Length: 446
Ligand code: GLY
Ligand code: MN
Ligand code: MN
Image (tube, rainbow, N blue to C red):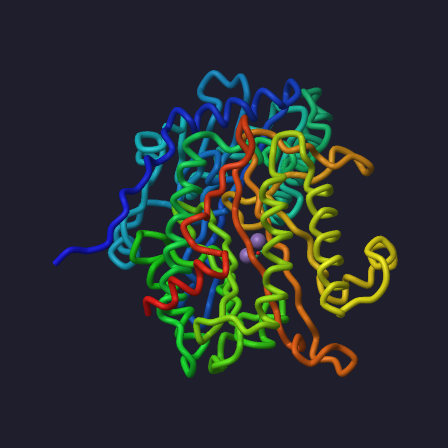
């Protein structure tokens, strides 16, 4: 018996993790230190927990995938610039939940300069921050803030004794997020793989789809494929919306039966080594588009293809979105869903009745990945090689009496993931069809 397997890309090397920490430390002012907390387990019900998902910044800087760890970056410290506090080794707990790295494992397997188990944290953590003049910690993390505040309070006591002074703390996130915005070749390989798995999952759903199946059954097909290829599961809640459910942007109930004459919209992506794929396809439950579905689909597809081609260095997501809005608005007028001139319907924003989300977001360790979209309030950020974006226009036609009956309740979105490179864009998600003839051909094989 042969199985469908994909060879996995190389993991990120210890050297790359070290280089990331060094790049971050190089951005800190003299005398500063940085606190990067990992994630903890979250209760799901009673004494069971949600599957663990590491905090992305912490993972980006360490590759450590255990709960309750904390990274300190202490530039210039002779005894080691990177320090991790990690879960205590505990034979009883390890019998229940598996091996823990411990301080030894953190240093040996992750190349961290110095590590301690959490039982020792109180003895060392604040002392290590004592001679620093500025701290960086994430503003959205109460525990890291508490550490920063405690270090400040302690420094104020020390001031009376004439010691060097910690003067305050700043939000750390933008420093890290600027680094994460540009993906390395190794990260791109992992994203490519997450996208490849995601594309297979979408093909599987297209092949399996049939009238009478339930939305959750297509979800099962998709998530089977994610796990089969070694993904940790979906990178975000899988959306399978049949008929008018496709018009609910974050429809995740996936509870209804798929009707013969409807379209189904699937927005689903695998997570692989914590990197996200994020694909949307919309296709007919029966395998054949109706005339009205086809007409609306071609409008979205045309806008999407033009937008994908516009992902090149120097372009901006603002301009790409503007192009999409123009294409969609023109299509809406041609189909009789809007009236008048294209520019007038853009200016009065009446297109937003059918298209109210933006066209793109960054993609990486987080599905809505980090990094600012503007250089300042007026200036959208130009795309650069190493950035990875989604391109995901859609049209969602409300079931309102004033609209042509043939289009009511149709929701269509087409989403690809594109890596900006030196020449233009690399489409990471082209293994799943989006042209009507290709979709119909794949579904006909069913
Ligand atoms: N799946 C979330 C998004 O497309 O942004
Ligand atoms: Mn999506
Ligand atoms: Mn997306």
